[in-house]
Structures are given as structure tokens and as C-alpha cells.
Length: 447
View 1 (cartoon, rainbow, N blue to C red):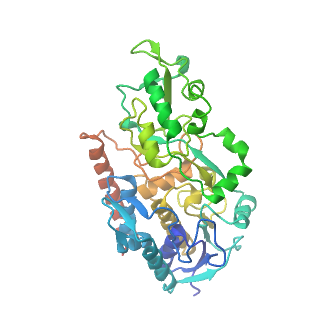
View 2 (view 1 turned 30 degrees about the vertical axis):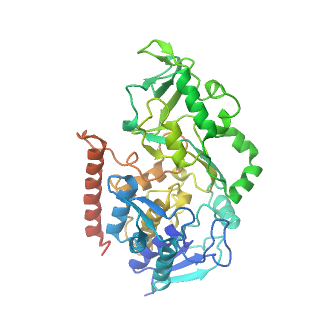
């Protein structure tokens, strides 16, 4: 009997994880990678799973969203987590790796796996009748991007990702912030952070002098070609530099927002809008930004009511390549209209190294199960793997944007937990890992 075959495009973290999971189920994998024949502007080494930015995979504590995701992946038998644990370097409670050793570890495991054949070639089409996982990353080649857009009917490629920060609702100080809608129109849907003149001026000075993240060359070139796009989603710090009161006539306009506790309008008001149905996440309206992440923490915590804000997603503005996944993908990362085509990695709308690998794990398992004639494996929303897949497939409230692993997207607990946020996150983790172990045992994963 012929051994079942799948194709995987891209040997980044998502593609390598997908290939490993499929190969472990006995499926033959052809893994296509255009390096070293062709390199993207972000890649410099020939090895697989190259870490192009930081060498940190962030928190390793299960009471953190990405830490829980790591532990779920470990228990299921993730190659990326195996490599990270084998090549880790001291980083406190975070998991950081020696990036060269990490890439070498993954490359060796993939190239030495008897069920994986590496093909050094750039792919611009999907072979008819072959189950395929596309994991070509945020700098997908022009040819592949055109095929995805035109032949697969996927819109939303190659544009600038302008997203405002998202904070955990429980970290907002509601003794200061208040619920209201402008002119009391509709329900009190917005959280409003009032500023005095002195508070606004201190915030304004910090904002216009804060450090911005450096643009990479390909971002600079794309920005030149998309001046109107940048004008339409201007970073808040750029808007502020146009004049002292520009924000007060824009996103921080206080008109019509009366604090019923004082009966007065404030000098300026920062509004936060609900990001998900549960109301566990709120985004800062009009605060798309290009500030570095540490500067976002420092400056945005100057906003009254956000002094202890926990950021579930930082604001970003850079060229990105991702799909409008809620319109296209299922919770297995397969296309709804073409079930033999899967996507994995940042292109799906997950953000971060570990999240990309996690999507590859789910896509690889399900692509293999498809060619083996087995039922699809949908992870529950009580697990971080399942919560991410559900976010990709269903989205939240408002426009779809990339998201890191966080407890704001996981299935809510049925009852309120006493003991504060950490106690609640411990219960989230216990529930998720118990479910993970059940699935691992029933499906024979991680063995």
C-alpha cells in the first residue's frame, strides 16, 4: 500500500512543526523550502526554524498564556519545544534559546527523519489532489502570495498591520475609569479614562519623545509605496507631533463624555472598546503605534486608570502578511472551501514564535489525519491551542488582527475564582492541562 503523502511549504517554526507531527503519524512529508536558493530580507542563515528577531520565546510559566501554550505543546510532543528546551539559555522565568543551536537542532531532526523529504525549491502553486500545508510566513514570496490571493481566493495579503494595544479588563482601575458612551447614546459600552490638563500634558510630552521601533528595510520600502495607508491609520505618536491639541480633537476628544461621579467633562479622555464578547479584553481606541513594547508599557500606563494595565497585545504597525482567516479557515487551520489546503504560522493571524509553531502542530496533525482517513482533531477552547484556533477561525469583535496567546481568548470559567488574577490563571492552566492529558491519552499523542 502506498504511504500517504502531504506537502508542506516553508521550513520555519510552523512548517517544521507541521512536518514533524505529520511524520510521527506515519505520513510521508515533502517539505519545500526556498532557502538557501532564495532568501527573504529578514532571513540570513540557511538553517530551518530561523529566529529572525528576539531569541526569547517569552514566559515559561503556565499562569501566562504563552507559557501554558508551551506546556500543552510539550505534552503533545512538539519538536519546537523539544529544541527550545535542549538549547535554552538563562533568562529568568522566560524561555530563551541559543538561536544558532536551536535552528541546528530543528534542522538536524527534520533532515534525519525518514518520513520527511526536504526539497529546496520555491513553490508558487498547490499540486492538485495533494493535501498541502502553506506555512510560508509573513514575507511570503510574491509568486506564492499572488497564488494565494488569486487562485485560492484569499484576500488580505501584503498590507500594513496597524493594531492598537489590548489590555486585560481586570487590570483596569475602574475606581478611576468609568463606563459611558458619548452623549449617552446607546449602552455604556466604552471604558473612559479621564485626564486633567496636567495629566494630559505629562502624557503628551512622554508620547512625542518616546522611542519608536526601528523600521526594517522592507517596511520602509513598503511604507513609501503606501503613503495613503499610513495616513489612514496614523500612529498615535505621529498624530500627537502635529500639535499639542491634535489628540484632544481626535481620539482623546472629551466632548460628550460626562463622568457621572463629578458631573463634568475632563480635559481629555482615552476610550477603550470591548475586544471580545466576554468583555475580558479592551483595546485603546485610536492608539495604533510604532513605539517599542517597553515604551508602550511606560507611556500608556501614564493614562489614569491604566497605571497597572496588563497588555495582552501591544500596538503594532508594520508590513504583515495574513489572511482574513475567520472568513476562510476552520479550527483545524484548513480552508473551509478547499479542505485539502491548510495554512499555518503568522499568515493565519497568530502572533509570535510559539503561537506560530502551535498552529503548525494543529495543522500538521490534521493534514496527516485527513490523508489517513481519520476524523479531524479539534482542540477545545479550554486549551490555549484550541483557543488560538478558535480565534483564527471565528475572530472577535471588530476587524480581525493578529493575536498572541493570552487568557482573554480562552474559554471563560463557569464560576468566579477568589484570590485574584493569578488564582484564576492557575485554574485556567489546571483545566487546560487536564484536557490536554485526556486528548493526549485518547489520541496517542506525545508518546
